[in-house]
Amino acid sequence: IDVKGAPEEFALEVELITEKKYSGVVVLPEKSGVKAELSDKTVTATITAYGDYSFAFSTDRLKTFKVSNQPLTLIVAPESLPEVPEGYDYVEIEPGKYGYGDLVFDQSNTVYCFKKGEYEVRRIIASKLENIMFYFEPGSYISVYETPEIGLDQYNIGGPAFGISGCNNVRIEGRALFDFSGVRGLYQDPETGKDVDMTQYVFNFYNNNNMYVSGITTINSNHWTFRIGACQDILSEWNMMLGYRNYSDGFIYSDCVRATARYMFARTGDDGIEVKALGSYGGYKDTIPMATDVLFEKCTVWNDSAAALGVIYENYKPIDGVVFRDCSVGFSTCSWSPNNSALNIRLAYPGTAHWKNITFENE
Image (cartoon, rainbow, N blue to C red; front, side, top):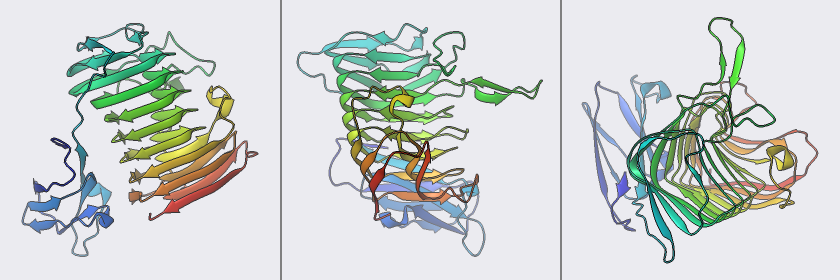
């Protein structure tokens, strides 16, 4: 829900009509202070601040709120409108199907506007550019397809659906839904029973300076969803990640300096929102010796399988200074292992770099 004009003060009156009767309703995160009223099949509430609000339901007399009762999540965000900076060119991209090399952009000082509608896309790429903006009109639906015969890296993984590298002053704005249902990823062949790897990367943004990423929703990611590495001065907000597959981690900062993420929502089949230290293993230039000044604020995770929030696993470089502030965990099942948890610091591979000053505040 975009609040028109992005006012600082507003009152959103919510009314939901359910198909069946429930015994109770609660709004998550509870610390938002939003109270819902339930009368027969009608739920009402008043929302007065930006953020995510999940209406969770119970069916028993003890009012046990379960994820299986199909919670409804509303993301209430300020309206995002495009502004073409002075001196920028303006290029429109129309809905349709685009080939492997059709959306490789090479022009600096440009706003690329994706018009609302349905797209079939293999990849969107920009590298070594200055002053670029990607604006997605609300109603942009982007279905990502496979190209197993082209674009594989040394690990036999396909290149990203959206890749930006070596750029300065980059903005991604608007509202877009990226659907990865058409990418099989790692799956089991029904005839032979053998594992088949058709993995393609999702969003890879690395070695960029001064970057803003907002308004992206992803569904059915087949791999790490937002993989942002070796970037300096980056703000990510109002992005939503919904996945269920192994390796569909939600949002990752790796080897970044002065990196903030806020108002993010993730429900994934792997870790939710995290910091890693991939270094050259992740393909990043070794220009940032240590990740520092990383902040996650007002983010929400539902971790079905793995960890919700944390500094997790890949440990190729040092980290000094990560804060998770005022974040929330909705439903935390950690089905893979009891070692996975809502808040997690897990130094694993190779386990030789020093991580310090990692803080969880007001969780």
